[in-house]
Length: 47
Image (cartoon, rainbow, N blue to C red; front, side, top):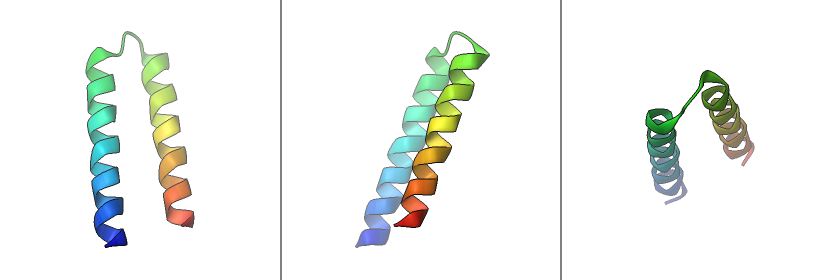
């Protein structure tokens, strides 16, 4: 069950990243979003 929830959360994060990428106005904003995504993934791996 936990694996399914993590997979769903990952899909939501990827969807958010794609959505944000489409609406990103500059590279700096995109880089910041990627850094935040990586930080979230690292936190998920610790759990």
